[in-house]
Structures are given as structure tokens and as C-alpha cells.
Length: 252
Ligand code: F6R
Image 1 (cartoon, rainbow, N blue to C red):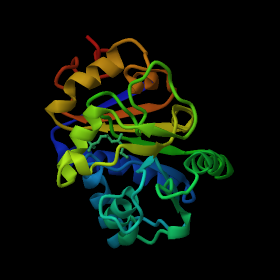
Image 2: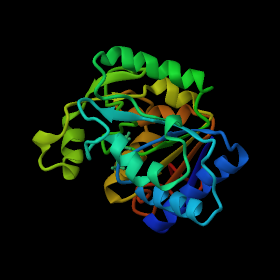
Image 3: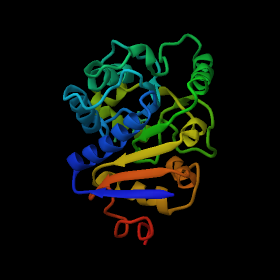
């Protein structure tokens, strides 16, 4: 079932998504959370950090697995996703860093690292709640448009459109790493619930294509139509190409 939550703007999107994550943490204090980086979840992480500071949320037993990491960037590189997660969430709450997992983009043997990441997710008992953003090309994690869905964690050549989109966070597109290690579609789809967030008009077309169009590896997020527990929280702009708002009218 796809649940659609339409919010006025980015702040209310962040609050709503943080509500869902906070509920998960309260119901299961040792939850395994699948986490995303990028611009979209920043407001959620701010909100969750504030809830921790005000004493309403406890991360002491939470475990996390992130979706992806750039190849060649280590934890101290400010463009790495480990750095991002420490800055935006982990250093602001009482999570045990030993319980936070992100693929190692500096691993000498990246295929081995990818294999070990799937083993790790299994050993944690799978993901309770997976947070996802969506790329303008329909990627989730760094599962780029392709002719098949890649099930396992793997090394991926980033699409030119992804490199261009992400160059806003680097000095130039030449500085954006060309590869990443990403969780595959298998672990994402096996998550017990999925929360996908989208903000801004530049996501409107891909949201419509992914959730109203055909299920195809050319639009990786489209596979989520088959997930039994998917919630999409989008602001007015991101959902502007869609129907009126509830699941039935969504694709009208
Ligand atoms: C990030 C990730 C990506 C982003 C996507 C959207 O860990 O896996 O799939 O979620 O590129 O990024 P933003 O939120 O910056 O638009």
C-alpha cells in the first residue's frame, strides 16, 4: 500500500517525516533505521536532534545503516556521507557511533566491502524503516537507471545527471567522485517499511513517473510501487504533477 502525505512546505515535510521516524524509535527503541543523505533529509535530522535535546527521543539503542558512500572519500572528508551523517545527526544525539554503519568508500577491496555490507544488514535483522530521497533521474540510494535492478550492495558508476546534480555541493563537477558503493534494491525492498521524501518542483516529474508509470529499472524508484508499506511525504511542489492527495486519487 502506498500512503501519501502532502505537506505545505519543506518545514512541515520535515516535521511529518520526523514524526514517523520518532514513532518508529518509540515503538522499537532498538530499531534498525536505514538512512539517506542529500539535501532532502537535512530538516528531518535537525528536527530529530531537537527532539533528543528536549528529552523526548532516545537514540541509545538505535542501529543505523546508510544507503551509500562515495568511493575514495573517507570520514574526515567533508564531502563524504560519513562526515554528513556525523554533522547532521550522529554528533547531535546519543547514538552509539559503533552502531552506525555506512559503506567504507576507502576499502581496498570494494566488492568485498559491498558483500560484507549485505551480511551486516542481515546480521542486524534487516531494516525496520528505510528513509529514501529520490534523484531527479529516479535513483534511490545510488541505484542508477539501468537495464536491470541490482539486488545487492554494489559499486556503481554514477550517472552523468547525478554527478551534475551533486556538483552543487562540490567546487566543480570535476570534483564529484565518479563511483559510489550503494545498498542494492534487495535490501531496500526488504525493509519492513519505507519512507520516501521529496521536496521542490524539480522532483515533481520524477515522482509522477516513478509512482504512476511502469515499473522499470530505467526508473529505479518505480520498484517501490511493489512495496507493502510505503509512505511518501512530499511537499506541494514535489507532488504538483499528481492528483488530489489520497492514495486513490494520487495518479489521477
Ligand atoms: C543519498 C541518496 C540519494 C539522494 C538523492 C536525492 O544518500 O542515496 O539517492 O536521496 O540523490 O538527493 P537530494 O535530497 O539532495 O535531492
